[in-house]
Image (cartoon, rainbow, N blue to C red):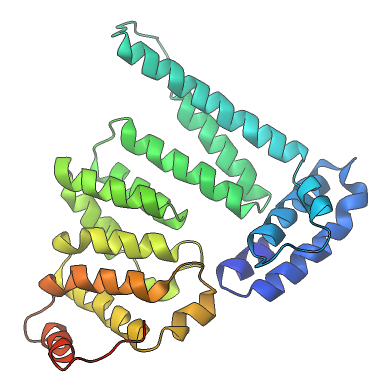
Length: 279
């Protein structure tokens, strides 16, 4: 299942689905074997998520998602959110009670949920739980650079593009801005995965003003290559969004920070010469 998951993220959807369908052969023993049931459920999720049309036998595939592992993972998420709600209420009520030996139960439950999903190869459930975990780290007041970098990195790896945009804007307002720079400068967009590409693009776009010129030039060079030949990304990763549109937006954010006599002048010449990109 983990191989199928990796193939899907690399854009080889046909091979990923082939392996996932093979895993469905474990269905007869799934009722008595929790491990087999978890793998069948994860493979069903991959088949649904990577199919452009409704797959044959969709009812059986959907039913295969209902497993013991999925139930337990859902319970962990629910428990975490319950603790979050209780915490929010106590904060609203200005409760000053101190609990000796208290731990962050919301974080622990979300971490358990992401671990269950990750171990069973359920990438799409893992993305959701891992993104929630990263958001939890950000909203609990951990302002150290290391905590913020870790959370932003987790959000982009999980493909939480909407969360990344909001988080970066907020961190740039309240600090530490260096965390945004560190999180964005570590991105090698040439090896971005299928479900993480958009979050990578959004993070670079939002962080453009605080990046070093060398990093800006590097990301802009990638953007130019993609705009001139979009299939180098769209065909490789089978992206589900309009890649050129988002890449062009990213380049727009990067242009003011480009090196004056390096890539910056090259981009400006293309714009002035009305160089047409393949959008």
